[in-house]
Image (cartoon, rainbow, N blue to C red; front, side):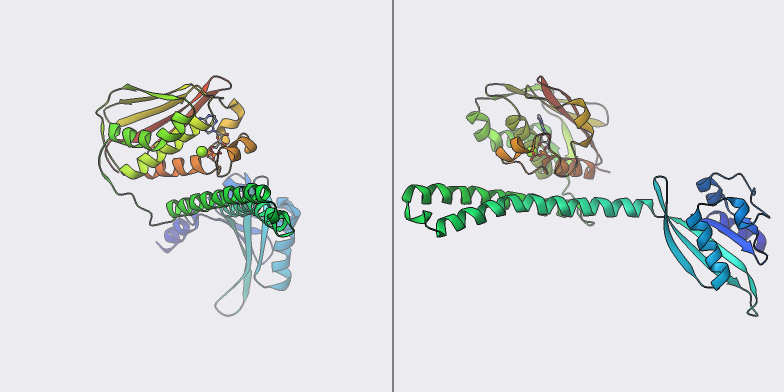
Amino acid sequence: MEKERLKTLIESMGSGLLIFGREGTVNLQNGVFEKTFGFSSDSLIGKSIKEIGFPEEIEVLIEDVFLTEKVTERQIRRDESYFNVYGAPVIGRHGNWLGIIIVFHDITKLIRLEEVRKDFVANVSHELRTPITSIKGFTETLLDGAMNEPQLLKDFLEIIQKESDRLDVLIDDLLELSRIEREGFYLHYGSVHISDVIDDAMKIVSGPLDKKGMKIILEGQSRIGVEADKDRLIQVMVNLLINSINYSKEGTTIFITTSQTAKEVIIQVKDEGIGIKQDQLPRLFERFYRVDRGRSRESGGTGLGLAIVKHLIEAHAGKVTVESELGVGTAFTITLPKKAA
Ligand SMILES: Nc1ncnc2c1ncn2[C@@H]1O[C@H](COP(=O)(O)OP(=O)(O)O)[C@@H](O)[C@H]1O
Ligand SMILES: [Mg+2]
């Protein structure tokens, strides 16, 4: 029974395991190890370190443990994966040395997360720097004398105001994203009529919509009910509509189509705008990803809108997809479960 138990433990521990006996040959290997390194079942039993043919880093680590009889740990990279390799001597009850144990812990996910985090910090810094450089530059020019010329004074102050507004919006979006991503973020579920969500969102975007001489046409079923967080859905719709307005020519039309299946609600926002190249689509929902940085900035975008949309829809256990054709238009489709999970 003890043996069975130990075997189960070793096989279900989730990390690769290899044990060398005192004489320096393998006397135990588990399934995770075999799978990770592509060895067949028990194929290494009785083999010495040299016979296994490990990458040098691992070989050196194992030899180190044998030589020093001390715990050794090292991070290694193998193709696209990262491992923390932990080696320790196995000491018997009477202090006698029985061999060594090597544990391979897959830390690829952690490393990737860290990369995403580093990228994010770099991106945020870059985004903050642009408006701040501009504010700083114009303030200095004003103080250097430009302030004595009323027209320059006004022009530069307007630029400073515009750039500070940008900072404001950017920081709002960042805080919003961080709130949504935080653990413990929850939705205020209620029964919501999709048409009410669309009405409210349309009211909010009516200013920019009119300014570009654009219109919205509603299609599909009008009274569809769903359990959702109404304010969050409005936020999603506003984000998609503002994008459609920003990335479309004047006088074009946006179509909002709603439909349903037994379990799901489907909302589509389609525009006749500039469209997006096929190869850009997979990255569209990434934080700070923009097809055209200049254009996005010009329209007051932060590059965070779609990241927020994706998070909010996923929080509802729904999904959002995009289809687009360059020069023809773009369609975002949201699918939401009718009942809250
Ligand atoms: N309806 C659309 N038509 C064309 N391009 C779009 C549309 N919606 C989003 N995009 C592209 O996706 C990028 C990311 O969108 P988003 O996250 O909302 O950021 P932004 O603040 O730049 O609008 C935009 O910069 C733009 O290049
Ligand atoms: Mg946007």
